Image 1 (tube, one colour):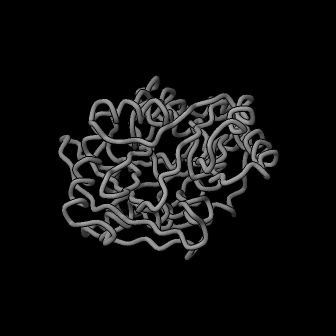
Image 2 (spheres, helix red, strand yellow):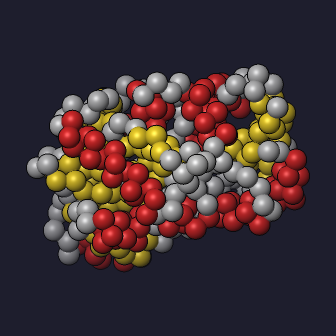
Length: 331
């Protein structure tokens, strides 16, 4: 049996989302096929390692204060490092670099691709230039320049951190009345993120996300795009993503034609290859007047059972448990 250790948590604004993803993995991984351990990385980079042989509640695990960097070398005894991490440190190439230095096998993209995809601004320019895809007009500014830049910008605009995900601190601005509290949120949640994107608003759009799965022989499983309709927001914000019944997610994406759906599925694979992604990724798009606008690519997208890639995989007959096994077996 393969020895698998699931890494989650870490010093990121997406810490809680990482635990949600990892809880779902713990609940559904095939314990008959794998010997499973769990490593919870604290926000202070301490860690707790536990062997588990059945679903457990992460919240009930007593936290230790072992040094994660001292624990790293002990991970060599595992066949696969399963990354349930998101955001800074866990998804931006930092953790991947440490694992590569130790020649450990892990799920997801390598350090270079992870770093590139985390930089939404520069990766989107690359995708647009190389594949000829439209992207929203975007200005990248330092956080200290945000207020000054917005006061001279034509509203409405969309703003979001350049190197963080889960829609934390993403805002649609029709006015600047709450700008002080928004800037405070950026400093509170993104202490290590200094770049903010100011994007033109692509209104009356259809929001689409699409993943792909790459086998170890470098062939692909094409997944169907999913159409996202937030119920309580103008875009797919944090609450729409993680609060139950806050968005309608449709497979097939009936808001666009079958031809366009197939185009997006194939385009997702081309983006995955261009950005050097590995094993799996998910790219996000807007559709307006039949034009495709590319937004970003996630190298470690959410892995709760209701997250987008698990839904897309289920639509082509891959169960959530089988999807977990796919990641482990195709490194």
